[in-house]
Length: 324
Image 1 (cartoon, rainbow, N blue to C red):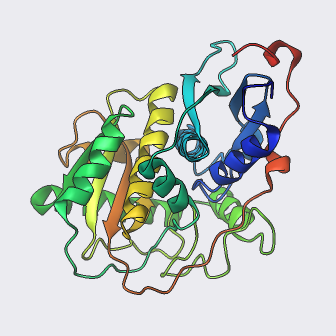
Image 2: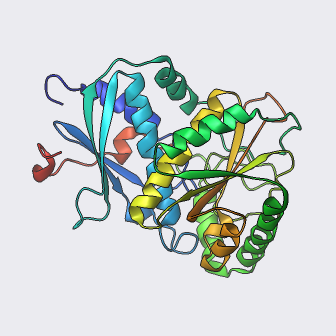
């Protein structure tokens, strides 16, 4: 980058944290381009899941999470990010342009950045220790700043979510060969940067992805977890991208205070089930369900592999070299 803007080492350090974001089946559906004055984020259609994610809902959530991870990483490195979302209507896969301005990091920036490498998706049953309401309130506030709404679901509304969760499991279990092939492709690449770790298809999950479709025929019971529904006022591409940013904010906030998290999207991948999730009391369009609680053990879960930054970088187009 030009004088006065981050050097390439700083940019790639931030990108190395950005690609730690969770993604559906660990597909990592993002591409990045580094220009003279900014960084560009693109959705990679080659990594689409035609069965699990027909409308690219989870791909956009994944890319939104990576975008927020990038902003958090840059903030800790001393750079504030000005984001232009969907800057080119003629190119819908161009999701964001990120301009950078020098800024002094604060303790929150540093803490959230440190949480990126500690975050895991935890499918285990959470302990019965209560989650302080202040923690959930903080996560909700940070999500609201990014254009999302978070509702804590309990009592009867919580019970209303059980049926669509189980229905989603049943429908996926009855899905034909295409879904099973897709799951095997993205869950069986052991030893590669696209792999879900061995054991990732067991009832106790240790992977680091959006759980896009059950893999054992069982619903991960909410048990003692707090159950949050993340939603947006719209359901277009920008709304889903912003939902991914808000999701990242919730996950990193929870991780920073020592809480475990698990994202559930199964009933939202099936259009017929989405209204039943809304019936639980969320206004707007639900985008993800999030389990939050205290992990049953302090033993760290394994880290899911990610592709190297160089593998997700594209050459910059001439028209993008100076346009931000």
